[in-house]
Length: 365
Ligand code: SF4
Ligand code: SF4
Image (cartoon, rainbow, N blue to C red):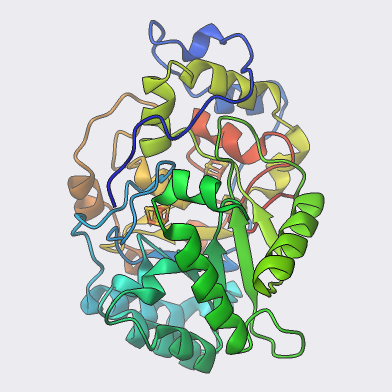
């Protein structure tokens, strides 16, 4: 779907820019500096979730996308790589206490081996989350996907950045809201989001402007009321997520001269109590060729845990395919190399700790 320019508007005033984030100043890892000055450290304490990015192909091309996913992306995880991951899971899931495999993309359903992967992971007794953009389930060839997800009791975590059509279409493309409503109704008819079925359907909100997300609980109440009254839609939980100042969203911020102000807003809203709950403490993220990252954001910044990439905060420009190809793979790691390991941070990490905090399962705390 083509991008429209100026779809993100600066509807709220941003604070005066911290000079550390202005173009004249090379950006250091301000997050690491802040942790050090607060006497805090950040390391992995467990792996409850293995988040797998199965490829960057997507039927949409949203303005805020930190993956820069779209129909033209060709990076796709092969079945051979999936088999290696499944083998590693078999070997270590009990020792590590892994509970969940979180499938993301792109649109993860577009990977031709998506279904085989879901079946294999479910056979290991693990919970599966599908990070679904909803509209892919309307595309030709995916008509049976909603039924498949229900049959295999896959949790659906669906992006819907607003309950109003205009706002969704501005960020995600024309017609996306209508399509999303149709798919949510289809999922409800299969039992998703309905009491007593155990089929979880969560919606994911992210700001459509350059602000931080509003409080999660009252926004969830508004979503539930509006979507039920107008479309008969029910769902379990709304997760609010902060837009990360990287990739497509970073380009928009810079285009609008708002990058330094946005970063300053994140830094000003940093809450050190959120450092304990950031998601990298309890997960690892796997790239399309099997490389290991502290989170999906670090993955997109080419910051693998083995440091075999130059990443955004060291001013690097290593081609992402090279990083993904050359870094150590999940199956090269034993659990003791992953637990207790220091997390690779960058200034983008303030996106996880600002305000109420932000993670793949919404606000922290
Ligand atoms: S935000 Fe999600 S739906 Fe939008 S382009 Fe990125 S991966 Fe696709
Ligand atoms: S961006 Fe990634 S590494 Fe940084 S705090 Fe958030 S989850 Fe952790």
